[in-house]
Amino acid sequence: MLAIEIRTPGGPEVLTPVERPDPVPSDGEVLIAVEAAGVNRPDLMQRRGAYPPPPGASDLPGLEVAGTVAAVGPGVDGWRVGDPVCALLAGGGYATRAVAPVQQCLPIPRGLDMVSAAAIPETFYTVWTNLFDRARLRAGETVLVHGGTSGIGTTAIQLASARGSRVFATAGSDQKCRACEALGAECGINYRTEDFVEAVMALTKGRGVDVILDMVGGPYVARNLSALATEGRLSQIAVMSGEAAAVDFRRVLTRRLTITGSTLRPRTPSEKGVIADALRREVWPLLESGRVKPVIFRTFPLVQASEAHRLMESGEHIGKIVLVV
Ligand SMILES: NC(=O)c1ccc[n+]([C@@H]2O[C@H](COP(=O)([O-])OP(=O)(O)OC[C@H]3O[C@@H](n4cnc5c(N)ncnc54)[C@H](OP(=O)(O)O)[C@@H]3O)[C@@H](O)[C@H]2O)c1
Image (cartoon, rainbow, N blue to C red; front, side, top):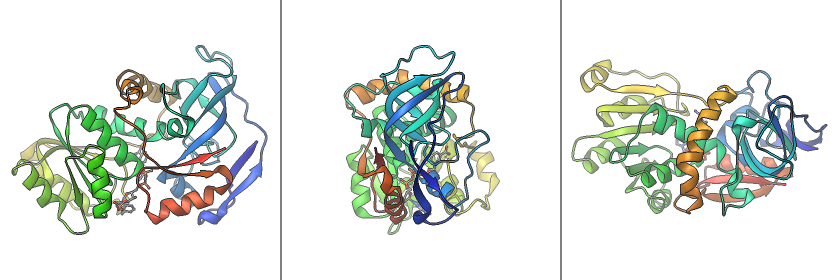
């Protein structure tokens, strides 16, 4: 197969096309003939050497693919060679063949092409488990999504608004704020020109929001706690601006706040399978009706993975970048 290897930790130029033997599906695994692979920010961290694959995972980058089933390993029921499939991976997506545990495979939602399907797993699994499982966001509640135009943010805005929440989102330009609003946010907040705590307080008449989904961390942590309503929940999915924070815990006590967070990649296939079941039940109907759509910013041929990484590092994108075979 053709694969994109990380030659050595470094910049986008270290992504190198190579020939490798096809992976062989083991017990409970499906071999996928990849047609498209999503690019995610964790791939950039892995390329720089800051996010090693978990034990047993492929050393190749790539956390999500769409394609067709090329072979099934022992003990796999429900999938046949030729079935269209999209899958969450612990690695190995930047290749023309990839293996996925069967629990992490989902049918391609009716009406979606391979590029859109490849853009689903990583952000939809992540948003589902952090926003709806851990932070327990319910219809009628308010939510603030930081990084509103990221792959994660565009998914979170759409899912939260489709499920009946009032959504606010932060982004780094007015144009990105308008994009958040087009996806269902009631108000995009330009964090470069506005204080998001003040904006949220004004939008909620001083109450604060019920839930915050944050990938920034560092100086945002204390400000997030100030922007939460009583019984509010902060779900931390990354710490792009720093992993340490000084927090006045009296606020946590007096407002009965919950701080949570998680990373998806090291979780077991059966834990990921529970998330997949929820997505199929709760989210696939929204994708098939067109109420929720992966936002595709740009595609690149697989061999131009380094160009795709350069674009993601520029921060110009709104939504997802996808590699096509
Ligand atoms: N916990 C998990 O399981 C999990 C899973 C997947 C992804 N993640 C994390 O979720 C985040 C989003 O991932 P993605 O693939 O959706 O990324 P992405 O599309 O590249 O989005 C990142 C966006 O965040 C915004 N941003 C805000 N503060 C930033 C900062 N300090 N540095 C860089 N960007 C900043 C940027 O837009 P602006 O112009 O608005 O600043 C940027 O476009 C990443 O941090 C990733 O590691 C976590």
